[in-house]
Image (cartoon, rainbow, N blue to C red; front, side, top):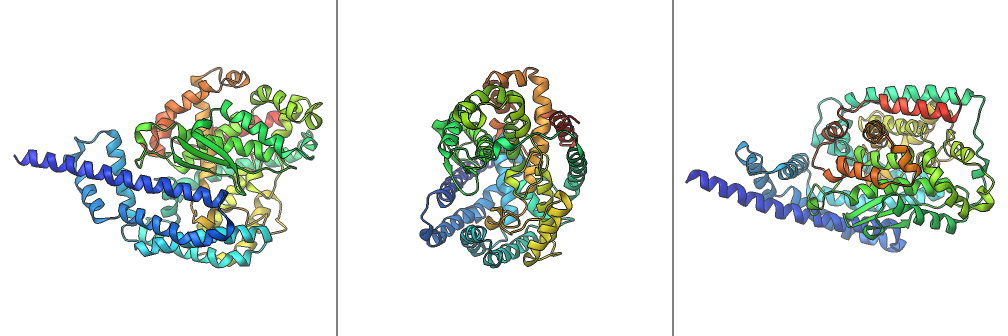
Length: 510
């Protein structure tokens, strides 16, 4: 009789847990839609007023995740007796909700609301500061965000470095101790390769990109390639914004954005392919995980691996342009009609240290991340303060890339991330490159005709592999578990170092 009562209690707890999990997921879907609206189409005058409503909804979602009832059902479902009643997905859902519950139950709900309102307003302040090159306008918001994050870190707890608590938000299980060796190897190899490229006698000509390209024609080309590379336009849409991003509402509504620059055709093309990588991932998560905590990607690093893989290892490959270049020439006959494919491919992959991260080439991109990573570590540890960031930023840019921004808009103000509280996010980009190179190594073994498929415009075979090995699982597995499951080994930097060496040796005839 006691066992029967226990069984009923477990099943009742599981049923109630699923109801709460679904409700939180619904709130988060709406919040995602609101975030997209604020960044894309909302009237400027209404944003600050709506920040309070956004904060209220976010607070309600937070209260559910740390409620007494959530604690009770999680306590019941995380016992050894309950495990035999939970399938793999249920165990993963409990794991994810329990982790958030334990991290956040000590944070007052009012603090979460205040932070939500702060970041909504900080986003507007950042946009204005960036537009007017006015760091002082943004500084008060940034100081409050840093103050909140430092308090949150102490609440979350950490073993060795306070930044570990923030890394874990975006890349579960990752620590400074694990990340530093990966990044040191990548930074040193990238700096060495950059030096050899700068000393090389051959230099691709990039003059073809130093001319105007009709924005309307760019839009046409992007709309043409999106469905071909795997983005389902019936389950998503593309819009314009200041800072490109992807925003899932649900698996059937994934919104991506891009930015068009008349004098930089590469920006929209590769920005669109990049965000499509994020979008395709979200569209292909197992539908059974819809309306649950598992309906997202495994981590920000894994998510970035999909966008960086599609943007760089597919989109910047010679085979990709063997297929798409004739169509691009049709759109821009005056600019590209007499330009050979090989010249276009090499120009597309030209290496040139630049100020803006999102416009950086594939090699120097990682050095941009190192600048941000080291600043964030020091900021959270209290070794530097927000007011010092412009000077520190410029000094690190000079150390790593040999260039110094002339304005804060092309320096410390260029990224949106800190305005929404995303400290700990930036390492995900280089982690994405590391994951992507490791995935590329495995996918070429499993699909020996990988690049031939790209050359023929057959992207379905590639997306099928990614769906089977990465996309479908959502958050079912932790990132390290997923990369081992997909590639057979834990993350290491060797594959990206080798990939970059081989690629740029060819491009620059080293």
